[in-house]
Image: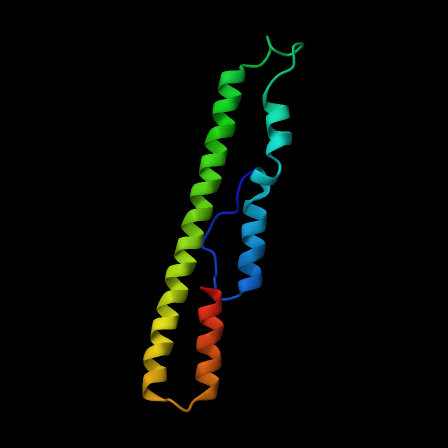
Length: 109
């Protein structure tokens, strides 16, 4: 179960949540993955359980690393937008649209 690759867009929060849901598939199906990785008594001679477990572990670690990178990247991007909006807010105290956008971005973080 490979996680999607490429840069994740944080602007559409629903799209970002869907990307994370897809990337969690391997975690959500871990029992199934373990059941298919560890051979039964009849297949123990045909499959190297150490190698298959190692591959499962590596795919889990890869998925976790990618997910963490995407999350941290989105936090960084959104925090930068919040900082910019706060600076703009200092200059224009009465701008309701700017305040609404700032609150929306703060909620994302």
